Amino acid sequence: MREGLLLFALTFIAAVPWGDWVIRTLLRHGIGKKIRSDGPAAHQAKAGTATMGGIYFVGAATLVALILAAVGIRRPLWVLVAVILFALLGAIDDLRGLKDTTGIGWRFGDKFPMQWAVAFVVAVILYLGNEAHIALRWWGGEVNLGLWAIPLGTFLLVASSNAVNLADGVDGLAGGISAIAYLALGTLAILLNHDAVGLFGFIMAGALCAFLWYNVHPARMFMGDVGAEALGAGLAAMALLSGQILLLPVVGALLVAEALSDIIQVSYFKYTRRKYGEGRRVLRMAPLHHHFELGGWSETQVTTRFWLISALAAALGVMIGWWWR
Image 1 (spheres, rainbow, N blue to C red):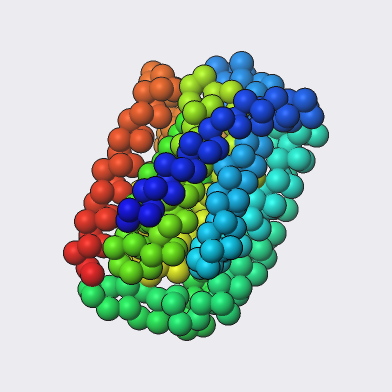
Image 2 (image 1 turned 90 degrees about the horizontal axis):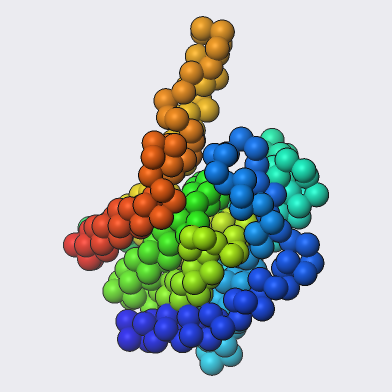
């Protein structure tokens, strides 16, 4: 745990001075956010903000993980595989969005099959490299998942990457929730003797806090899909490799809520349109953070309150994991 906290602090201290340079570089290359017209009207003022900032924290975490590998701590590289491959997938979406005047980018119907394909490849890589370590931890024991790790891992990678992506709609929200989740999973992994995997959680949390320095309201840099998808994939990979699959939805409770709110809203709208001839909504707007925005909460209130709930959920997850040990 001592080494994890040290890596958290060092990653933050080393990364945060580079933020201004990253922002200037992104803007110099025309990488500014196009705001979707179907979001809250107040968000239109954010058009032109530097995006694809996920390159910043993914790059910082990658560099630190490679330094660890050079001194013999190589297991975090398995999580890094998931992070980098999903970052590349997200980068394609971001680059398409820069060329699309609506800001939508890669259409979901085209992107979703690619997500499953990449997730399957990552799950296979994780299984082949860590077959004996991909387990389900429960009440003091671990059940090896065997080949079931591949379909389960594929689902978790897709679900987690999309959940973080949906949460990335308010300044500081997705980054803060993800940092808390990485700290929780990192703590659990170290407490339950998956030290090397746990170290990656602290590294990523440190890199995310450096990013949040520039991403809190009013944001100067957005993470983009390159960051959101990488974060979700990393959380899923850590849960797989440390046996904390059942606790992933607990420490990431608000990510689950964001995803479910979108699924429920879209499903109910389609159902009522078929049944009544017009679509009806459960929420003012989905995902969940927009519902509260339109209800009168400011962006900082949404972000801070969601962070607080995430911290409570993460603490609960760590407590349950320690109880199960």
